[in-house]
Every structure is written in C-alpha cells, then in structure tokens.
Length: 275
View (cartoon, one colour):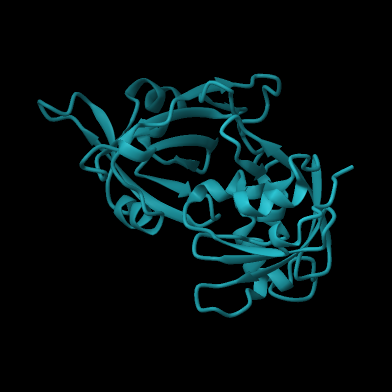
C-alpha cells in the first residue's frame, strides 16, 4: 500500500499534461515533484476517472532514470477518450491512488468526445469513425532496460528514418511486391490519433530510382499534422492488404538528434490476422 506524505510542503494535489507528440498514446510521464507524494513507494496501479464518470485502471511503472509513467491500461484510456495531439489533461489526485481527469481541446473548452466516451446516444458517427483503427490488433511496444524499443506486431511492418528531406519516403521494393502494393495507386495511412490520410504511390523506374515505390501526394499533409521532423523514425504496419491500410507509429529523435533504437518483431501466432 502506498504511504501518504507527511510533509505538507511536498503535497501536490494536481498536475496538468499537454499532449504534444504521439508518444502519449503508449505512455504518459508524471511530474517528478508530484511523485514525491508517495515518499519513494509509488503504487503499482492507479484509477483514472474520466469526464464520463467511468473509471480505468492503469499501471504506474518506473524507469532507471527515476521517471514514472502511466503504461499498462493507458492505451485503453487514450482510445476511449479519443485523445489527440493538442489536448490538455488535468489530473486531480485524491491522496491515495485515484485521479479525476478533465480533458480539454486546444480551444480551452472541454472535449465533447471525452464527456461522451461511454454515451451510446451522443456523437456516435464521429466516435465510430475515429475508432476504426482500434478494430485492428494493437502492436506490443515495450522499452527495454538498455534503451531498445521492441515493436512486436501480428502484421507485416517496416520502418523508415526521416531524413533532412522528410517528404521522401519509400516502401521496401521486396515487401511492396510480396504484399501487392506495387500494383496499387494509393495507400491509406492511419496516424496515432485515428485520422486517415490517402497517400499516392508512384513507382520510380528512372535511372536513379532503382524501382522504388515512393509515397508522394498526401504524405506532406500527414507529416505536418503530426509534427514529423528529421531524425524521427516511422513504423508502417500493414493492417489490411485488401484496402491497402497501414497504421503509422512515430518515435521521436532524442536530444541532439539521436535516433531511437527500434527492433521489429513479427508475431506469427495468429496466421489469419492479415486479411
């Protein structure tokens, strides 16, 4: 059981978190000063009560650098409240392991979809469209103690580093041939917020193109909306071959431009997952 702080000067009852990059979809870092409430003995789990009045249980995990994150179960909270970059969350702490969460849009107003997360009569068309990407089995993303990011998926995946020219992005030729993308004119990218982007494909068969399949028209808008910068890494997850749909996952470069170290693994336990 977590021990309550006996030092009133260190008791912090609330904190806020703006969602500024796509990492929020897999974890959320708690302020170090707030963690002093637990006197070095944080709980393993916490309960988040959303604007709808429903509750979600999330795991609280620490790293070697002393930072603590909401992790296990956090993705469900994110998905049920349709959280996206630009949202602003306020956490009110009850002194034990429970948090009241308020969610705001960039306008400063309460997020309507959050209040209606469990409301079966309101905003159904919007919520249904935004949750389409959740029909696919989510990838298992874990960070190891030595800093590697393990990305395990049931779908065919590939990664691409964003160069100084972030709008030059290709699909591996062998993969494009194997899965049939080489014959497609467009692909649909689904970003971490659930928004889809139609991107044109073009086979570059020029002397210097080497037959690469390039993503062209539509990619710039997606990259700009998701604040992609040189040094970032993108993982493309082919979740639906027939409809040429790929979920995209962004991993930001560290300070100084150091790229994240990713390891992609294929989970072949369900051979029928790709349709």
